[in-house]
Structures are given as C-alpha cells and as structure tokens.
Image (cartoon, rainbow, N blue to C red; front, top):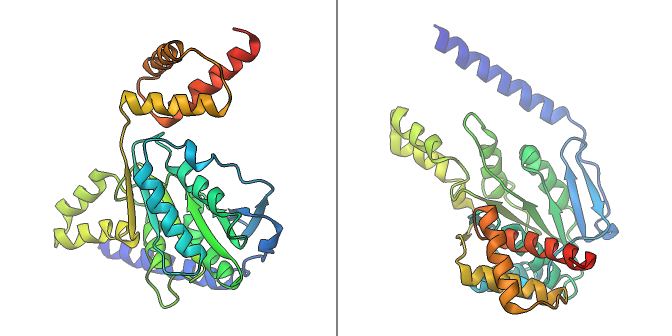
Amino acid sequence: MGGEFDRDAAYWLKRIAEALERLSPPPRDTDPGQAEGFLWDGGSDSLLPVPEVRFLPLALLKGMDRHKQTLLANTRRFARALPANNALLWGARGMGKSALIKAVFGALRADFPALRIVEIDRDVIGSLPRLMRLLRDHVDYRFIVFCDDLSFEEEDETYKTLKAALEGGIEGRPENVVFYATSNRRHLMPREMIENERSTAIHPSEATQEKVSLSDRFGLWLGFYPCDQDTYLAIVRAYAAHFGLTVDDDELKARAIEWAATRGGRSGRVAWQFIQDLRGRMAEGA
C-alpha cells in the first residue's frame, strides 16, 4: 500500500513540476555580441557576460598532445559549422581537463569571431534545456556550453534531463551548440550507484544501461591519467619559461619534487601552484 502511495505521489509531483516549467517565464535574452564568454544563471535564466575569458596558451599544456589535437580539431569543425561531437573529458583530478577546454577556445577565438563559450554550473544542469532553447535562436554564433566537474549522486534524477538535452527529444541539440564537460568519473556516476541498480533491478542489465547511457551521449571521450615525474617536471619547466623565471634547472627540479611530495601527488595543478609559490618567493627575493 505504501509503495503504491509513493508512486502516486511521485507521479503528481512530476506533473506539478512540468506544469510549473511550462508556466515559467521565458529565458531572458542577451546579445552574444556583448562578450566572448558568459555564465549561465539558472535561477534567473539569463546569460551573464564575462568581460575577459581567462585561459592558458595551448602550447603550455604538456603531456596531452593527443588530447589537444583531438579537441582542437573537433572544436574547429564546430566553429566552421561542420558536424562535431559533444566531448567528455574525464579522469584524474588536476590534470588540465577544464584548462584544455578553455585553451582550445582561446586558440580559436581570433580565427572564428562568432565563437562563444558559456559556462553552466553543475548545480543548475537541470536548466540546460532552457539554455539551449535560448542559444538556438542566435544562429549567427557558435556556442561551446561548458560544465566543469560534472557528476551525479544517488537519487539525483537530473541526469535524465541532460540525456534528453544532448541527443534525445524532438528538438535535439541545436546545430549551433556543442556541450563539453569535465568529470572525475567516466560514466559521470559513482560505481556503487550503477552496481546498486544492477543488484536490485528486475532486469539488471537494462537498469545498468540506463545509467551508463548518459556518457554515450558524448561522441568524444578523452581520458586523463596521473602524470609521471618526467611529465610533471616538463609542465613545471614550461610554466617557469612562460613566466620568465631564471632558476637553475637542478634547483627547479629539486624544489618542484619537494613541493609535489608535500602535496601527496603530481599533476598539472600541483605544478601550477608550485610555480605561483615560486614566483611569489622570487618577487620577495627569497
């Protein structure tokens, strides 16, 4: 009896939510010519211009040559109004997933002045269909919609909204929009969530497929793995050269290794933080 009541309640709550969605005011339009980058405000359904999109030069990102070439080629095709895939950059934290997306945008913005980047926060990913509906009308521009650190926990049903927005539904993804996301998880969900579905479902394989099919909406998968010491030091040296730091290589290597040891691991982020600390110390004369 209780289970039947819960199903009825869930059904009517869903119907009420859908009705409220239809009654909600349309998204507030913004002229994409105002800026190259925007933040999506899912609360007010508006695009907030970003005066300056911050990104690193593509050449500074080390240890990911294949990733750079693949994402750059996909994005260039998209900017030229050719077929392109949604992209999921997944794997080890701090290895430059979001930095690569922004660097690719920075590398192409001069050649493709109609290219724009829009960042959507994970917490408002349920509003993605409304964002895409707004962007669809701006046919003179090409939009990279970017979500950093995307993942879903148990009882989170918004992944179904994302699935429909990316490929499903009668509207489909707008031709002038591509979706790039970063995540520490290959399938965007914790393993135990998928395994629980498999163990409790009447048809385990079907339940599992429902969960992992979200990542299938991304035609391009780029995996990032923890870097070894040689790659870490190459990143450190590239950053040091970029900022014009004059340091003996043996000293730079020793200090960088010591810094990584105190952080418990090596990554592009750790290398960047080390260089920022070193820049500060050298400016103080330390």
